[in-house]
Length: 269
Ligand code: SAM
Image (cartoon, rainbow, N blue to C red; front, side, top):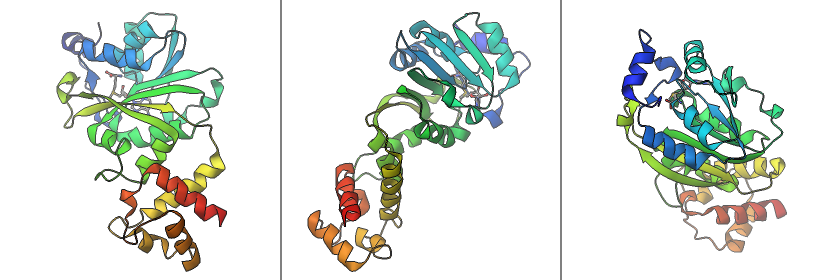
């Protein structure tokens, strides 16, 4: 089992975990097994981001058809190739942000204990890709996970929460203590999954997401204040009456469905 503190220390030898690559290795086999079970399907390929020493990789192999893993660090790449000998595993020494995902024509699952310094660009790369995705299951910093899954009215609810929840069923799968990593990071983590729920319509999404961002432009101001520089009075009045909004409503009080109704009113005008 790779997810084991003695094994990790032994295999690292003189090597130090590299902060610049966000290296914190999982050392609890039970947690790793649970993540892999949530992330994988027997008959699907899993793409892994940042396999490191292979703690998660070996469990992904247990529950997937095969695994393609992308690792940026040559030291990790070499150790991983040594640690796991399985013809169903292909390891690429590659920055995942440069990976051409269009080569994948089959349906895939995506999984990773994401390096924290690059979590947002990796997630956006996935959200914007044309991959035929069954599910994304990733470990992220707890506060990032809270923002992505935030519900209407909560402090963490933002344009990002609405955009992500428009495209995916976002689920907080499990909290993970900082104690199950070596070296231990300063923050706790959470495993979050994203299951696609829509046919993609890029043009609609572009306009809708822009609209939502504008509604949240100044969080403490009312929605009316945020809209008044962008739309004429007539449009704003129409939005308020058709959507039955209180005059002092703020963006963070509106649900995804209400945002969709508002935006459809704006574009119908
Ligand atoms: N999966 C391992 C585990 O759970 O023990 C390691 C996780 S560690 C948090 C993140 C891993 O991602 C490291 O191995 C790091 O070298 C790798 N990494 C960092 N940036 C990357 C990038 N842009 N593309 C691919 N891998 C990256």
